[in-house]
Length: 493
Image (tube, rainbow, N blue to C red; front, side):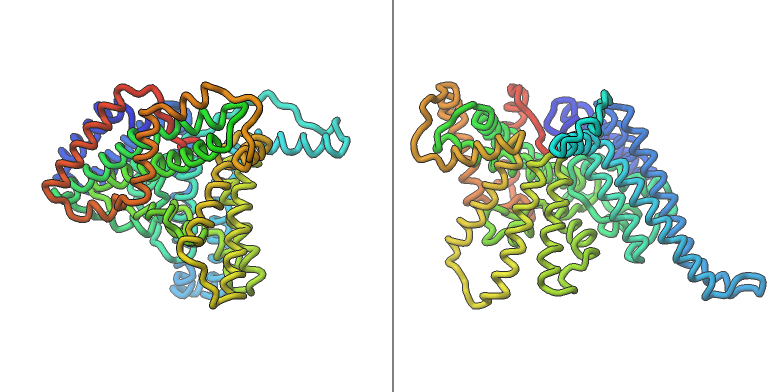
């Protein structure tokens, strides 16, 4: 089930909201329980079997967090009576228990993620290596067909942030299973983010308020996100799909295709984030901002402060800093940046194209850091910095979108082609030159270049803004009912 579907809009969401507001006079825990129920229904709609996987990992993480919490204060009991170990001995034992519980949680979560997401990629990589070394007998053949559970990358990262924060003492373990389950399974951010740290939602899970202002802003957020998805991302996606799937293309068509994909992935994911934030507000939650005009970035470092902010924050807090961050010298800091983005690329997908995408971003981020240190007084013109950043991002998107590395390299060659190919496809030109698609493509570029961010625009809602939201949202709903092309890019991650 996706947000931009008639099933969600006209059936699931109205029922979920109606029951939730009927429970407004009930305790917070009862409302959390309803969110758990709706989250599991939402998650299990396409494949009910994976509900058991999420329930199992949620239960294990909750129990292990209680073990860690108990271990953190157990040494105090050693001072209560002479029959107990000394506080020092108990302290050592408690620390070992906490570390073991953390290790079990991290290993179990990453094992589940690794098995479902990377099993086939690992087998393929091993077979390629064995064949290259002339050891064909060492290849591994399997008929096992593994389906990727919806959103496993997102809820796994959220669960890991919780258990790590509890271990670090930065969050209090939740004693109630319902409240913790609500954090993991809340459907607005369950399958595609934002990836919210537990400390950000901890107090809201215990106490939150419903208000007209939250509801109004939530509706505005949701409808503007739906419009981004349906009116901008989907038309741009059609252009991008035809450009990438064509056997031959001119340089203009290749650049049109990658620009269209840049628009598609931005409006698709930022639109989903807007809808998720809006849904959170409808249920009384305030989520964190996830996008802030990323294509206006003046460096790749700046880009990652604006694009998928919740993911970049997670990678910084739970990967880059634990690797040593910038505490171990500049060379190590550059290496940590590269490794963080390399693993971030692998997180997005089990493919060499995603690894190259992560490596590209990591190398440029490290290069920018070196440049800032070696040439602190050199400042390129703003226009040049934006063009360079956008160029790196677009080259990266080629690897992100292409099915294989050869396909990506061929597409990059087409982007740099001076002379047109000997044969061209009229189908490609016909698609990219359709007036409907061209208008929406141009509108997307205009919104990126001049439009205000939804987060800022909805801070205050006036009557004209409300009318604009209703008009745009109604248009999106009507268009949704007539479209047969409605993919959600980040659902595959």
